Image (cartoon, rainbow, N blue to C red; front, side, top):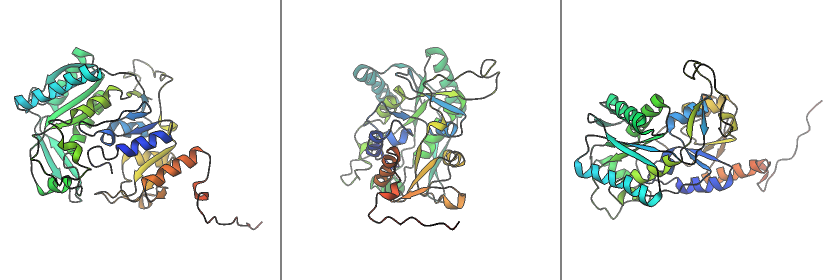
Length: 343
């Protein structure tokens, strides 16, 4: 769950019912043309999540962002127009605040790769072009969040066929992460990416988990909706010169890493920066065993203390029990007796 188009969105909706606030990655909430925003779900890009967990950045919830749209010059004219029409439709039907779009001055040159473990990654040949376009958009329109649409290779491979059958990994996600990380790290501004691709041939056997990617020309709608309310990133501490001469007090509405009560993660994916930061801070980490991944990084060899659960349903139960002030181990038919310790 979480590796397909919006397949973790039902989980996010369920968790959001059980907590004051849920902070999660865009790929959990993105379902191509499908989405389900909630006021208490914060849409936070991966690099920003790492900075938040490390205590470097705070999250400031907002009611509205002005979204700037960066389009890859490599897109064919008709495909480019499809994405411009999505932005126009989001303004007219959803009331989103979208600034004028910009074309990169060079094709971005996205290349897709796969690691030996089966995880996806990728590169872009012209990161400088992406950064120039983003900077100009921010300066000239006042954009407060950035949506990027890059032209991705049209590859009908065995890996893609596996993905459409609900059995493989998302071959695009690694390269998408490179793009959004670069923008967020450079400009400290919310960013998410939608790949530009030609529609695939109709396949009646596509898995329900991958079906959201089969229903249109673009994956951009969910990105625009997510960014429209994405929290902004505030520096917690840093270089006084960078912060205008002194460390600024954070707005009272900001969330910081110490506001986090529980962190939920696949049990085989515990090596990320955010998990390591929260483990060092003593956060309650819930590791879900049924969510298998292409990674093999369990918590125990890293010295990370976790509560292991079988499923996300059980993880929600742990969160609800904790919210009620209960020991979740007591919600079972067999309770071990208290021991008498020697004096």
